[in-house]
Length: 455
Image (cartoon, rainbow, N blue to C red; front, side, top):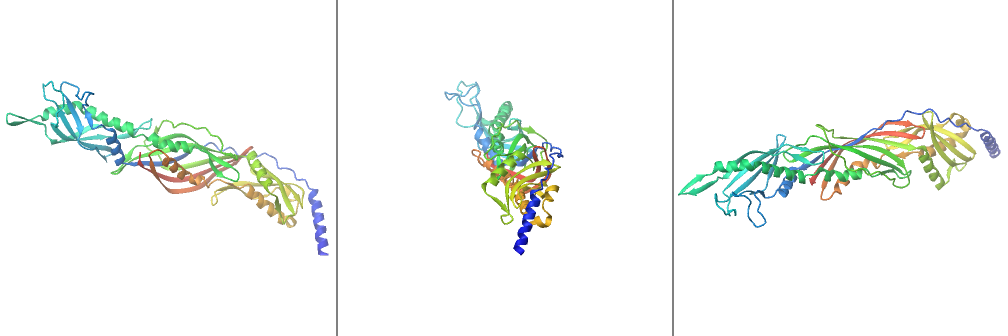
């Protein structure tokens, strides 16, 4: 008797369902578009003063003034040579780089036709230079070295008629005459050897590569870097610090394979007095309904989506926008053959870093096809299944972005960089239902520090 009544109820229920034809909600009523927003990856690029010292000593010829000609002679009637006695020492004091080096001087015999330099220098001194440092638009470290002071290590003297005659004034005049050449030699070494573009270019290049952020749907994040800004160069007793900030736009594409992208060259470096060291990632995603529907079809076709103990099967599903909500059209068969509509508002879940539909529920007419009491089993099953199908991950690989940038630095030839991440969190900002897709703007806050051990 019970089995008979159950079967009769089922037949009556199916008959009731088959006679219902819910109207599709209208595709109207959309949110205003979200305007493009720049993102930033920033960090203090620091490198030890030892690096600067090594580069200067490597690039600076030991003979600063008066190099020999091909036949071993020195040009000039009165030959004068300045040579480093030891390495250049480097410090950072009072917002300037202070350099010092011991120098030796050679002078040929006055009024002699023999221009071959003598075996021994006629004097030696400790010379100090100072220079402010800055960055240039062509990615170089600029210095403006000026002679500061000196002290004698061995005073210039000649032995004549049993007495030592001081040549200090002569040596000073010679040094004054050639100090500009020495200053320019140091500036040239800094300019040629300390190139920030070679350090930043691997990051700039790798930052443009599409990042897969949802493997199920094939959702790719495509960054498009547009500029790099450097702040005022600072430092301390151990290192120089260059604040850098890369600005880029973001977009997304739903594709099963890696999407093509335009490679842009490293632009000229922009300079500011101050640069924020907070990395602000404003990740703009646009997910077309056509792409979501394509991936829904692929997913549903892979296997049967049976619900409610097999009494209902999801044949197909598609989405579109309207009424400031995401509308889901579901075709089912079994207990009920036909189409139902559900709607819900997309939200960003900060716990799982996913874009999902909040409170997905049946549209008014679809909800009345079956009474709440009779349809609870498959109502809930269909809702949960569709919620799962249209949930898109937006965070797993995005959270790895600083590490990817670090890896880009690591790949640079002859370079080694360490990165520290002190904060990293997702903050949803805006979601907009548009006529052709969903816009989502997610703010990712992080603080990044970079240290260059070698250049």
